[in-house]
Length: 320
Ligand code: AHR
Image 1: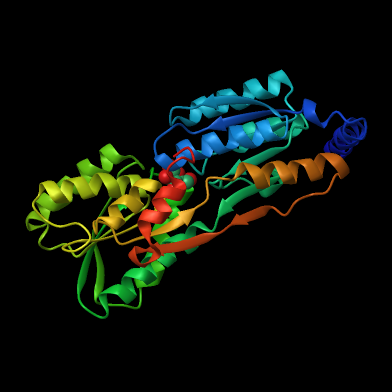
Image 2: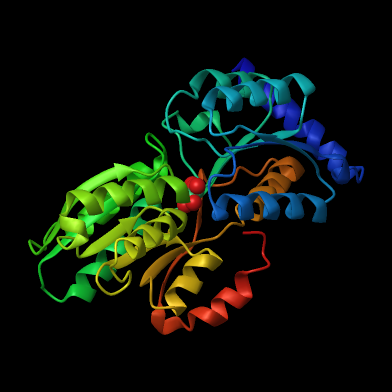
């Protein structure tokens, strides 16, 4: 009850500020995971651009892949009395305490691109794709592509404990579950990076008869796929033909690979999570309008049939 009253007070104050035309003075803290992938770099760029467009003073903190750094950054944002906090949570667990602290300080928190296992009353909203659906789309593409032929799959997972790694795995497994011809024979984390994607793919190739036992690679992001493509070429095989490649993100480099026939499909994840987040925040601060707890972004499948070079040209200067 005390908390409700405090929240109502904070909202009333924000409404007054907006009415007085002080919206431009908003200060928002952004705890970003790091820069593990091209997609992440684009999300950072777009978030800064969206903040600038709206006259928001964005305080940016790069956590270098560490949850402890994110927690420290959030605590520092709370101490500075920011108006709101954006956080892209590196892993799904361990957020209850710091989210409670933000709530007690009446600072709304918005999750970007990944989810957490905390109660949803601890944050204002989460702007994410349907991560299970993304894995499902990738799996269904492969089911259709192999047309009933036997296919051994290797999987490069994202960061262990992160919601995209958990959910993209789940969605893909659901999609292939009723197809006995498709089997995941190896699955390991590549931490969403090109370097680790390459390294782990090299070990998969070695363990699987130089890659001859492998029919397809499912990578939880494009960067790991791009690293794996290098490993496949170095092993003397043709990525995209000897080993089919399906991944997630739709970063420019995967379209280059697709145009060269070295990758086959990707599921797009928009890097613009901040736009919908700031819109929801504006509405909340202006009139106390609670957004839905989940603001879902689109997931679109791209294949070689989608003029990959054209998409590459469209995307190459967008901050990836
Ligand atoms: O949470 C989104 C994922 O994080 C992206 O798919 C991946 O590239 C990034 O590192």
